[in-house]
Length: 234
Ligand SMILES: [Zn+2]
Image: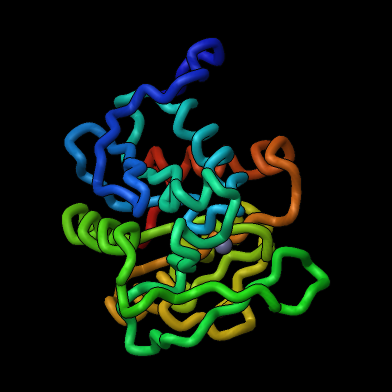
């Protein structure tokens, strides 16, 4: 099931484009053979959380082509990653741009340091799903029809699962991170709010604040299990 260590410098799975960012950067998904996928795992929807890409890539590169059972997006917000910004090239927080009932046009605020108030403003977009990155992801979900989504963030150190689903409970057990029903503040227009409205099992996996080296030690094995279909979702 595993790729030899010396071969782990590159990703050897099939990669498909599912759209383009504002700036024309490709949005790509790594797929199992046959494209059949039960779970979609997604990193870096916030461009200042690049450790999520690093750890998910570490897992993807360790799995042989015939061992990959689920799909992975290493970077849902490439323009943000290039800039090191939470939002995309237009300053939109993609995780507040989903077409939900609770989407609002007001600015959304975040903090970039643990002990600061949430004082930095971003846009939720001009309307629901206004951004090409959001639109492309919605179309991909329609095509792949995964039964569950795991979306990676940093660094609230929890497994956030509004449903308390089996998948969320399993991930909490495996990581030792606390299972929570919300992150403690309102997130209108978030991917999680959208999934709740669609009855899609979505788990928000929040890394703890740690270096990519430490995060790989603690989390790569969990993503290997996820991507190879070793974690049952029901
Ligand atoms: Zn985030």
